Length: 150
Image (cartoon, one colour):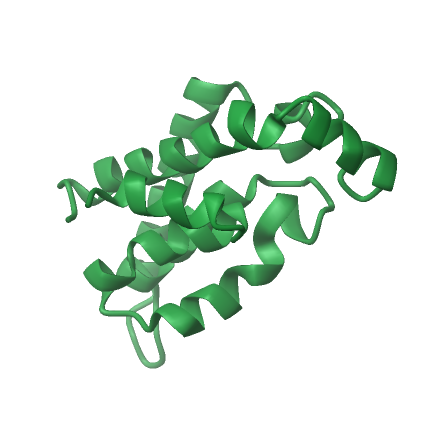
């Protein structure tokens, strides 16, 4: 199954956007799936429903961090490389979606409010917006990595 399909399936199972993107790369990263789901949990809906940076993007940033990030006693140049790849992810996502800001992607729908949550469901934004953002983030991360990861 392709990463995009894994991420969208996980998302439709009820996991948030950040969890779904990060989870879809776990086998490739040799990263524990349970840990990935827990670490990424607070990043959904633009970070805890604050509707800031889209969780699909932050999930992708976590993937890039695991792959390229600087660990203990490693060269500082790894940080700059990771920042560059992070900017590439953000810029590519903006090229495709016009923004990385969750509230803008959701046309101002307030996920922190019960009325906004009802509007989210009534407008089917999960399927019309969020599902595609999850798939787009996976596609971009795969492009940055430089190969289709299966």
